[in-house]
Structure formats: structure tokens, C-alpha cells
Amino acid sequence: MTMNVAEYARECAAQGLRGDYSVCRADFTVRQDYNYSPAEQKVWRTLCDRQTGLTERLAHHSYLDGVKALGLLDRIPDFDDISERLRKLTGWEIVAVPGLIPAPPFFEHLANRRFPVTNWLRTEQELDYIVEPDMFHDFFGHVPILTQPVFADFMQSYGARAEEAIALDGDDMITRLYWYTAEYGLIQEPGQQLKAFGAGLMSSYTELSFAVADAKVHRVPFDLETVMRTTYEIDKFQRAYFVLPSFDVLRDAFQKADLKSIVQHWKDRPTLDPASL
Image (cartoon, rainbow, N blue to C red; front, side):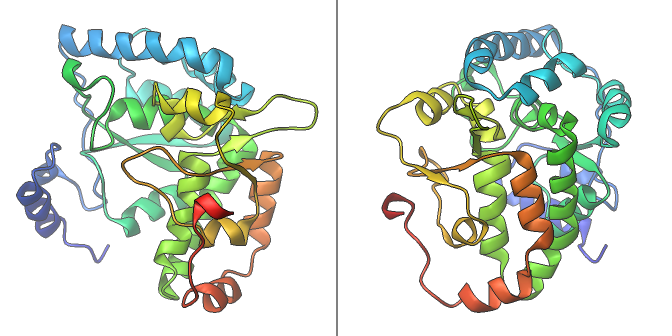
């Protein structure tokens, strides 16, 4: 790791980020320290109960199967326990982090089938929206779909190849791929209804319904290069959502992609507006 952990911790403190970065190891992981209060356990159950009512109708079956397989709903998950179950399914495990971590260690964790999960939870006053990704977003949003072997393979490939794109000045392009799939992806397999699988949707009470059920939503068939060229919204609903026909299409398109050619061809050209695709 070339990233200076102590320097990053000082930067996070200066920005007012909530996690305790001062206790990070060299790979930016920390101990989970399972000592959550009754109030925090109540927040977890409230969030899960409320969101499950939506995900049971609007989430892809592989996400719902993952929730059942991992058992995430009754109490704040123990990272070691979930890791043991996840390893048996797809070879992935959970590592605790204090919040957002730098891109290089994040990609390295993904490349080695380790998913970073924030070790703190939002408060009761933040049920609807939180600026930083917390444990509910990371766990309830991202982890269940990692039980899906094909998507799990894509995530490992993404971690392994992301630095390749960044080295070519394709930082924004590779980030857009993650945003429109792992965070805000939709899927419609042949003969099935449109469903969601992205973590940003799974953990959002309002945007999940909007993305899947609203008749006015702009939904676009998935194309790897189009995704990598399309800008996105950070603090509001997306103006477009990309729809996969299957996880195999996502995995195979990325694994076969010539990232060098894609980045070099498009990085200095105008980006695409999601509202006009």
C-alpha cells in the first residue's frame, strides 16, 4: 500500500467524516467491535422492516435469496458470521472499514473477494437519508447480491481491472460502471418483470419504488461503453437507469472488454447526458 493511512485519517477528520480512521490498519480495515446499543439495534430492525416491504416486491430474486441465505434482518450482522456463510457460497468475505476508503485499497479488497462494510450505523434521525455510506447501505444494499456467483465474479473482475482504467486516466469512466450497476442497476431477465439489484436502490426507501415502478422513469438497455460514458447524479434520483438482461451479460462484457481502447477512445470526448440517452 502506498496510501498513507495516518494522512488519510487526518483528512477525514478535517472533513468531519464520522468513522474513526485513526485505528485503520495498513489496508484501511478496522475491527467491527460488536458492541451496538439497543437503540442502534432498533434502528437496524426499523430500517430492515421498512425496506423489506419494498424489496420483496421490487428486488431481483437473487438479492432476496441472498438475504435469506445470510440472515440479515433480525439484528445488526456480525461480520465474522456473515463472512463464514458468504465464503461457502461464493468465496467472498466481509471486512470492516470506518467509512469511505481510498480507491486503491478498495479495489484491492474487491480483487481478493473482500467487501468493505462500514462498521457504524446511522441514527434514528437519518432513516431516510444519510450523506455517508453506513452499515445499512453497505450490508443491506451490497452484501446479499454477493451470494450470486456470476455477479460475485463480476465484482472481483472489477476490482482487479479498475486500476488498469485509472492508469489510463479513466477514473470517471470506471466509476460510472460501478455506479450504474453495483449501486443503481436494474435487471429484466427474459419473461420476467423489471427488478432492481443495485445497493443504492436496495437501501433507499424512496428511490427503489421510483426506479422500478414509476412510469416516467428513463430506463436504458445496458451497453458497457454507453454506461462508462454517461454521467450520474450524486445527491438526487438518477435521470436514467441501465437495465441488464442478465448478470452473465454484465460479467462477460466487462471481462472481455478492451479497457485500454475504450478509455483512450472516449476519455477526452464529451460525456453523455443520462436524460438524453
